[in-house]
Image (cartoon, rainbow, N blue to C red; front, side, top):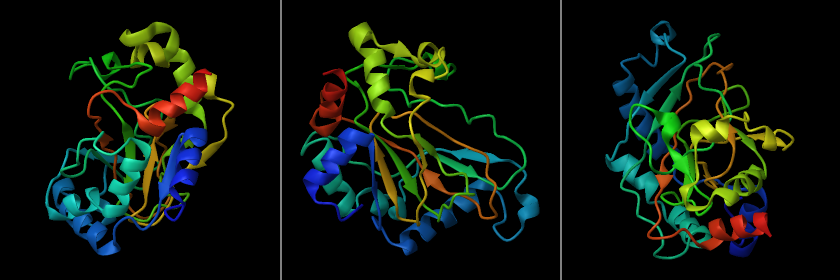
Length: 251
């Protein structure tokens, strides 16, 4: 989809709640990122016996290959298309990283959810909040740093589910809802949506509406999955296609 004309990309984003960009950065950049992350995991890429956890979570990185990926021209052009020129904060790197290993064990983090934006505390992630204006978050990025196939724990996306969450948040206004409150329904309002998997080659990036309902899953493949999932922060109030998608959901 990286070759979609601008207006087609915007319409796809408004309708589905995400767009997929391919070939955003080269495999060499992804490989340099993986090498740094492998060292931080403490695992040996050549010895699966050292892969003892289903997931290892790492924080942000701003070394050169991460900056190169985060500032790729095609990616920043898409930010301008979807959020608006000058309306987003330039990325200085990538993070956070859920590194997923082949495992028969569930990591216990595969529930449906949206990524929240403001107001929470470090020791209670369920207290974080989102509101219908999406204060504090313009986009969620899913940045593939390794090839991800159907068995490699691809993130599950509920197509069009941003519409359901916008309608859920609209009645409560600026205060919004906490993740605890949103999750009380099990995100049942989006359960009928078509599900797709965020697969692709290294260098693929999914740009997701902040209200897109998504979930992890157990790794059933053989190769370790490397992905970054940073937010794109807005400058001021969120506008552009992100706000347009919300307005259409509420029309």
